[in-house]
Amino acid sequence: MRDVAERAGVGLATVSRVVNDAGSVRPATAERVRAAILELGFHRDEVARALRPGQHSRTVGLLLGDLTNPFYATLAKAAVAAANAQRFAVVLSTVDEDPEVERQAIAELVGRRIAGLVIVPDQGDYRFLRDATGRRPLPVVFVDRPSNGADGDSVVLDNEGGGRMATTHLLAHGHRRVAVLVAPSYWTTGRRLRGYRRALRDAGVPVDERLVVTLRQGTPGEAEAATRALLALEDPPTALFCTTGFLAEGAIRAIGPATGSVAVVGFDDVPLADLLPVPLTIVATDAERLAETAVELLLARVSDPSSPPAKVVLPVRLLQRGSGEVLGPLAG
Image 1 (cartoon, rainbow, N blue to C red):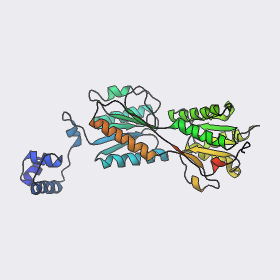
Image 2: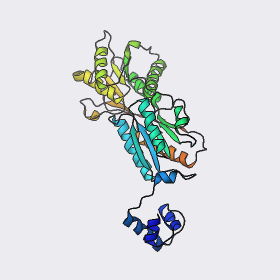
Image 3: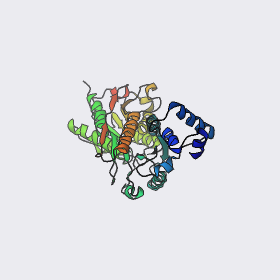
Image 4: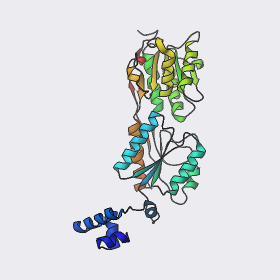
């Protein structure tokens, strides 16, 4: 800053006002300062700025699961765009459901003096955040799943409502043997399973636990094998609710040429789902809105740390394409 001030022929305070866009500076003077900044390649040191009392950097941290999952990739892209629109940079880290990797990543981000943190939490206990952030409270927003053991804002999808919506839709099309494939016991798929059970109970249809299949890893290959096993039962299901897009992908492979004889509803989209011989009906979610809402909550928390934690539940919708509208035995 001293070099810029000397080049522009102004004082340090004037450079500071121009760099931080604070206070009034004559247009001609501000232009000289900006020209000196360009000539010297000056960049404000955000970390040093954050060390000043009452200041924070204009960088936020984003911790996600596996970016090969299209849902997380879309969420990351939207979060970066939303933060950039408010002149915040984003440091992205993927932890792939590994609690130890996540702890290390959070420690690294806190060391950068980030303004706040958006996390897709795993199943772990987040009480460690209190120690990790030290004496400076760190604004945190938990996205897609709520946290365990830590306070913070959260924004999630209506997973239970979506599970109920999918199952009710299949029941309405004459199905009573409705199976469900459940990804490992994440909070999201657990709530989707709860919606499935609630829909059956509301319709007076008993739950056949043989039709409730919880997978160990939730891969398309597992879902394909599980679907084949379900269809081989003496009294097989006539409809299938898949709690993730990966599981729907595997189920469709297993059904194969029989597509059109077994009704299928997925949760989230899969590539080319609308181009299948019988396009896939899904419970559609909005990952972009999820990310944008999380960033909005975080930046609001940065501005006002004293406000009470906000809990936001975003709606989902059923997108009818054909596979979920295959008629069952009791269709009237």
